[in-house]
Length: 313
Ligand SMILES: Cc1cc2nc3c(=O)[nH]c(=O)nc-3n(C[C@H](O)[C@H](O)[C@H](O)COP(=O)(O)O)c2cc1C
Image (cartoon, rainbow, N blue to C red; front, side, top):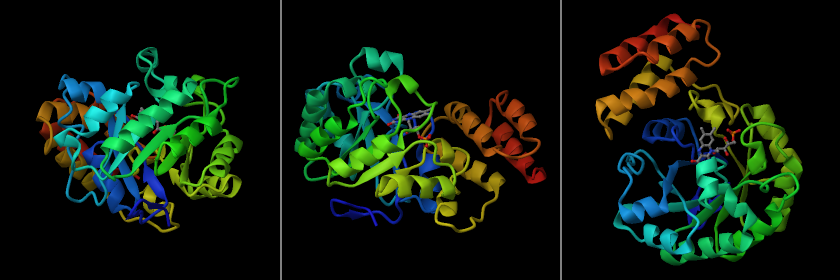
């Protein structure tokens, strides 16, 4: 089992940060179905320090989350350090740092995957995070490089380890691949072989077979499952080769209630829409539900739509 500092994960399969998706609802459900760790959506370190972003719902947690992990992004060590020492970050057990976000606005700011081009700075950021984390584990989420001509994940991973991080998650793609194209298992394997802290592999794992392939090829300690868990929090049971019990109507209602516990109804309605689209995955008749949910504006409509899942197979 993966051990991170003093924390023992109950499963090697984790839900990584997914902006717009790894909210309090998905995290609580993923933990219930056996995820070993769930990470918040990414939050700007600078935004936190300046109090300029509406981060309350992003940082909201639930007592049913056994381990609380927050993901921060930023390119300046001093802001990472200051953000971690804020009171609002005290409750988190793990601080995860983002070196993988490919979004142009973020990259232009020298944040997210732009940092893959600056391993030294990555080391400084991790070092600052470890310094202000007060003994809590710090982890890093990275890609394999910026583009196919700059695959430098081993170099970056070594900086991360040397700076004191407790584990690394590697998405086996370059920044320029964004979220498509082949996942480079050889590069993930090279990272695993280059450091002695736990390494989690990531990219396109949606079934137990794909997980087994990643484990066999790379030797990683665990696997992060992102898109495969959207609309399917029960995947974490399937990945343990067990058959999950679930009722999608109830999942949608509970997910929505969790969102509403930390945000206004209107925001929760907008937030659940893309999850509902995910919950229709593989269901005949799902298209009509998707069309309806994107028109919804109230709690009542969401609850009615949740009931429609009862008629689907
Ligand atoms: C919509 C979306 C938002 C994402 N947001 C984040 C994020 O905030 N932080 C992060 O480290 N990775 C983020 N990712 C990347 C995922 O965590 C993961 O690395 C990637 O999707 C590959 O894994 P998968 O094939 O299991 O989805 C995001 C991915 C998607 C599709």
